[in-house]
Image (cartoon, rainbow, N blue to C red; front, side, top):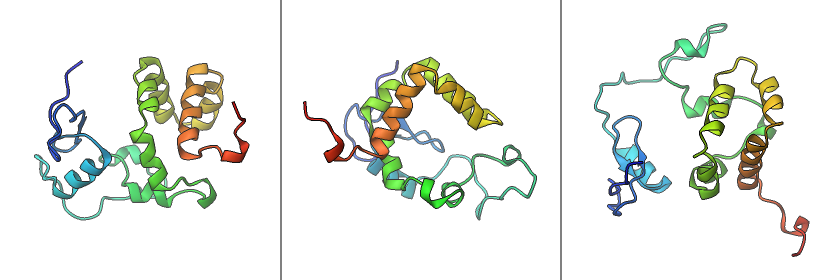
Length: 153
């Protein structure tokens, strides 16, 4: 495993463990990532303007790259939506980061992401203790237990 270099935004030594997907600059945290995104000039030219949206019946995979975050956040039922601030907590969790070091878990997540029938695959994977541990960790981060429901030690 390669040692982390300095953060390209704040300069913290050994903290630049994340990389910008567009220009590969190192950064250390969500705030530094945001700052970098504001200044990022990708090495390859990108076409300006909005990204194309999938036409009715056209699979998303035929578009270049993943859908914009705004499109993902605009889809689905409001009651099932997790606020962006809580989603960002997932990226800051050391416990979650530790779980994601497991190559078997990463493969399970890739398989779910690429599956046509995600729902039935999720049901199957919820029988895997490692996947359940990952799901529970995510839920504890985005929906922390209420203090009155916690049993005293």
